[in-house]
Every structure is written in C-alpha cells, then in structure tokens.
Image 1 (cartoon, helix red, strand yellow):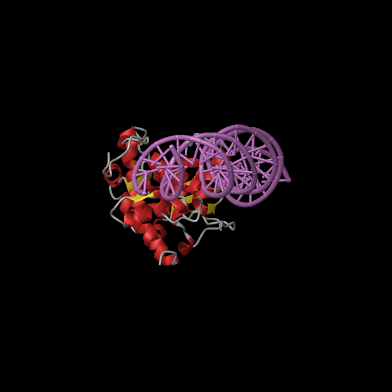
Image 2: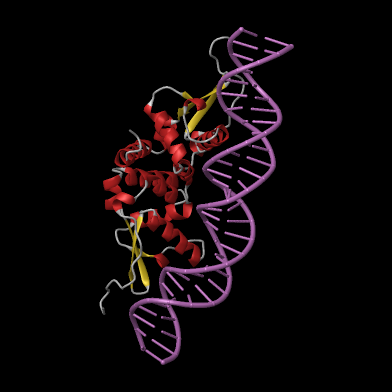
Length: 118
Length: 118
DNA sequence: GTCAAACTACGACGTCTCTCGTACAATGCT
DNA sequence: AGCATTGTACGAGAGACGTCGTAGTTTGAC
C-alpha cells in the first residue's frame, strides 16, 4: 500500500456490453465533456480530474466525469486522493469499430475550423 | 406548378459551415431521432414525416424532425402538404469525414446485438 | 367552395441537465 | 495526530428537453 497502488474505493462502471450508443453520444454532446475526452485522447497517460483546467467548479467537473463514466466513455480508478481517468478505447472500439476515431477526428477538424483549439 | 414541385414554403437550415458536432451528437442521442436517421439512411429516397411509424404523437414527431433539421442532420423540403426528409450526407461527410458511416454502423451493430431491429 | 390530409404552433407538464456553493470523506505527508 | 489535497454528496436554481393535446394553417383533390 505504500507504492502507487489503487485504493479500496471503486466506482461503478457499465460493462462493455452495457454501453449504449445513445448514452455515449449524449455524453459527448456536451462541450465540456467533449473537451475532456479530447484531452484524454491526446495524451497516452491517464489523467487526474484536477489536471483538466475547465471553466467550471469542482462540483461540476465531478458531475461531468461521472456522466462520462456512467455512459462507458471513461474508466475511473482511485489512486491515493487522486482519481485517474482513462478512455475506454478498447471497449468502445470493440463495440463500435471506428466510431471513436471518427468522433475525435471530427472534433479536431471542427476545432481547427473554428480556431478554438490552438 | 402542377407537377410535383416544391411549394413556396421553406424551412430554415444551418449552412454547412454552421453545423456543430455537439449539436449533431445531441440530435442523434435521442432514440427516436436515431431511429429516424437510420430509416432515412436505409432507403435511398427521401421520406415524408408520416411515413415513419413512431410510437409518439404527430406533435412529437414534428419536434424531432425540427431538431434534426436545425442541427443540420436532415434537409426538409415541402412538397404539397407533405414534407420530404433527406439526410444531409454530403454536408456531413464534407465536414466530418467518416463520422456518419461510423455512427450508422454503430447503430446497426447495437441494434443487431440488442435485437431491436429485426 | 368544401373537405381531407399533412404538418405546425402553442401551452402545459414532468423530468433531466448544467451549474453552483457548502459541507463532508478519503488519502497521503509530516 | 494534524493538515493539505483531492474529490464527493447534497440541495438548489435556471433552463432545456420529450411528450402530449388542441387548435390552426397550408396544400391538393373533388
């Protein structure tokens, strides 16, 4: 328990077969959550909630991460006081091949077009 | 004007560049609307609103078609008393290459998996 | 001109969503 | 033990959403 181990707390996730397309689309239809997912996809590593510099309060951030988790888009694991977030790429790719990539490409494209992503 | 011509009434559509990914995802995150889009994609021809046998009232159907139109997913044109609906495939493909196909494939896959589509 | 068909407008209702603030819980460090 | 960090729970408020019913409009056919 002294190394960076996962702590006892666990969070409910839908299993792969329980992920619903409508829920995923709904999760991704919020600008804040789409932004989170894009940042998550950009880096390889998992990120803590607090590493996202979102223009909302902590409560709201928690809310968005929960929506993402409950829809099956991200996997969350506690490590110490932090909560690590990772895209459920494997599950999403298995369930809906090519969808996540198209979605991320579409988001990138739109960000480039609109200039809201450097 | 005696043949099957478009009548004077027109409906506001977002132009191609005005279509937002978040709005498209939101439009598609409703089961009724996803169903509409799948039916539209299945057949080549445009369909009238009343050709869809949805388990909701006419008012609600109108509402869903409006959401789809305003988000840029479908194009609607009056012809007589009917309103023809067509997927804006060209615009969506130009804006978000591959996205619509992935989305439709994902929906098909889920329908097959869950058995709610014959 | 009358009538039916297709769709719309408007208001209503209950629910869900996004946001916040405050108070609380779990963990790790000293 | 004490404290800082990280995230949660709960409640609230404003607004959006999906649904309906009724009344109305537009068009085409007779």
